Image: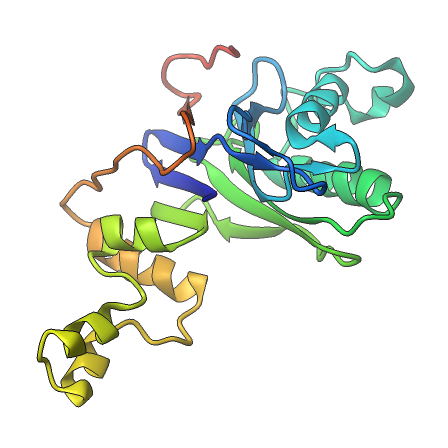
Length: 243
């Protein structure tokens, strides 16, 4: 099972992921690190779900290589260094796509199906943003912003069932379960999640329930072993320290 979760509030953004990595060969690693800081000393992080690597390189290794470029430690790509005074999350998302899709995935003969979520703060901004890059075989649309500075809430991806139950209180098969326990089919259908429900509508339902007064509770994401957790506090508070 693979799950990524981001929780964005006024004071920062928390990122969590499981630690099972599946390579194209079918090999599954139980201690993969799916969350990475993308630039030393800057509140920018990325996490992934889907394929655990591109070709023979793991996503963890690739993100470390990208961090070298963003931090100005790769002389061959000096122009990729992020200026701490002017960088934006959108700029980092564009570079993330260029590196993983244009440089790596397009040159790999094996298809790559990978979703990356980028969370963090643009230079000088008080609130975080959340962006996504989706590689689906030979295609990869431009990065898209899925939460702007004014949006708050929890957003999850990967295999939805466990988090649907934890946060929304019901899984996809709730209608069938209600019928088995004697609820009339017509009534059960009205209570169940529509089968055409998209991830976006699941997020909107969740946000409408959690954005106001009640805090969102969370448990450890399902995993074959441990899970990764990372948080980026607002840069207007205590300065972020890269691990």
